[in-house]
Length: 259
Image (cartoon, rainbow, N blue to C red):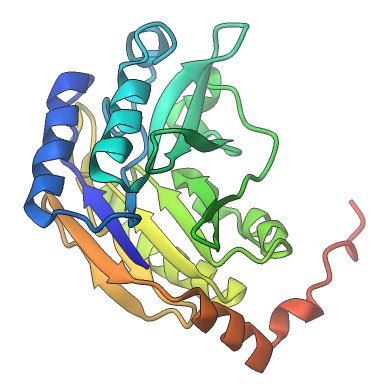
């Protein structure tokens, strides 16, 4: 089972330009049918707090692009886009499509990045989500969620094979990114595919460093700092056998600390 992480230098709030970038990068590698393609958080706009300008509710430009991309390439696609809640706040979401272009999973970011004022513009999600990729259980999270191991641990009770993390993670915390991605893989005995942006937005530089990590914390692919696509082959049976051979998840205690 093949996975691809598409690392973009996202053009600021320019959906057509970023759609074209994605197409061009994927045309270089020609993904196999039924493979899984990951695109970054807010892949078409960058990490913008201008919700009315970037939300996909009315034009559905991002939704249509992703659905069509999945159908054209005959692949699964997971990417970040913005919608709005009934009260007008944004929702920072990860949406998955199957090779028929049908939506098969939608996750809303559980933790708003308060240092970046995301909480003032975006409504937090309320639940963990999983979806199926050819018998492989996938659990998506978004950027700042990586800093909260308790949600990965709660998700681990559902035994996902892969955590799919999409992000706009800045350069000044690059070491945290790599360390935490490896830790989430090791402690939950699961693959982690973490796709980040590279380049610059109007305020910050981004390191790229998209990663695909195995359940032992071994980095299978590292995208470095430029626009590129990284690829790895994943084996869900390797996750299942490692969990059987070293069954640490069975020893989890989730309810022993009183608030």
